[in-house]
Length: 293
Image (cartoon, rainbow, N blue to C red; front, top):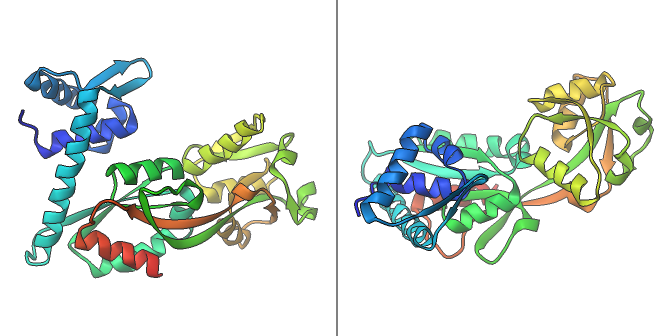
């Protein structure tokens, strides 16, 4: 079998996403090119690596074996590039970081930027995921560093404290919630909402609604937190956003903030790497920087 690094990265991306379409997008290939590569990988070894179905793909036993070795090979390649990067001025290094919405919109950019500026040969690939997905991705070797809620932690991860994130309800100052300092999520079931068009935080909120058997009523879904806060301030509906975002938007819009009393609305965020794998010196340096800040 002759697999190149692109084949291995594609295979792991497809395995993580459970979808050839999404896996192809993650490594920058068209669906047709990705499908051809995967078929060639199977034909070369005369072995089925993926079970294809209506809802996506799953690994066969042979696919599980390949994913294990692919992670080891790519990890060794990353270590090699990290070591060589200490000596070769022109060699670039790429670090894959996955983080939940709260980390990305509240803290991570300001912590990442000075470190990236000080390391001109390092590129950071940042992706947004839910905390449970981040834990699986880091443990499986699909990404190098993760920032996630402590609630998703397990023994395969080495974690260090990163930040505390709180979710709040924003509403127009004329809304009845404007008079309340705190409320529970279940008490908002009859309200109309303004939501995000997509993303890990929106998935998290919808999952909490499903957990208590509530279907939230969205009047509109928008792309940014600022547009959500603007709509909420006009009385379109209420919204759930990170506290730091709400306070920033309150300077520009007539917003009322109400704390969420539910435990899931306050999350201790941690930065993590895989506990059973030695990171490259560059990955270790970024991990230490994020943890120390």
